[in-house]
Amino acid sequence: MIAEKTSFLILSYSPETEILELEWLAKTSEMTDKEFQEQVLLENKMLLKHKPKKILAKTLQMEYTISPDEQEKHNDIILPTFKAIGLEKLAIVVSHDLFTQVSISQILDDDTTAGYQSNYFEDITSATAWLSE
Image 1 (cartoon, rainbow, N blue to C red):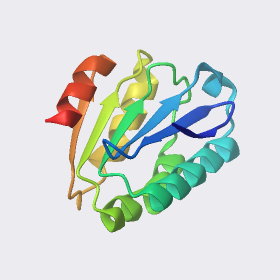
Image 2 (image 1 turned 60 degrees about the vertical axis):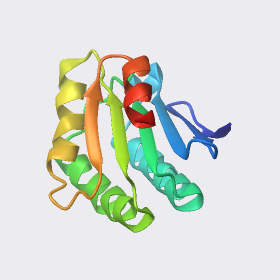
Image 3 (image 1 turned 90 degrees about the vertical axis):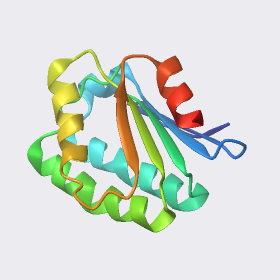
Image 4 (image 1 turned 180 degrees about the vertical axis):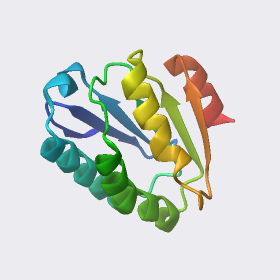
C-alpha cells in the first residue's frame, strides 16, 4: 500500500510483513538539499506512524549524492527513530551511481549504536529474501 508519494520518493507499508519500502526515483537528480531534507522528514513521519520492523530501501534510481552535512542531518533525524521503533533489519538495494552508493553507505557506517542488521544488495529479490529470513 502506497502511504506517501512525492516527485522523489515513494513510501509503501505492508502491515502483513511489517516492511516499509522507500523507493527513490530518478528525479532525485534534480533534488536540492532542502528537498532531500523534506523527504527525510516524510520518511521519519512514516517510520513513527507505522513502526516497521524492517525497511527495504530501493536506491537503484537515486541520483542525488548526499553531502556530509546532509548525511549528518539525516542521521540526527532517522537514527534515533530506528532505535525508538525497534527496527530489526534494513536492506538497501544499491544505486548504480558510485557517488550515490558511497554517500548512502557512509550514513550507515556512522551509526555506531545500530541495534539492527543492515545489508546491501544489487537486486530487490535478494533483498526481499533476506528481509523474510
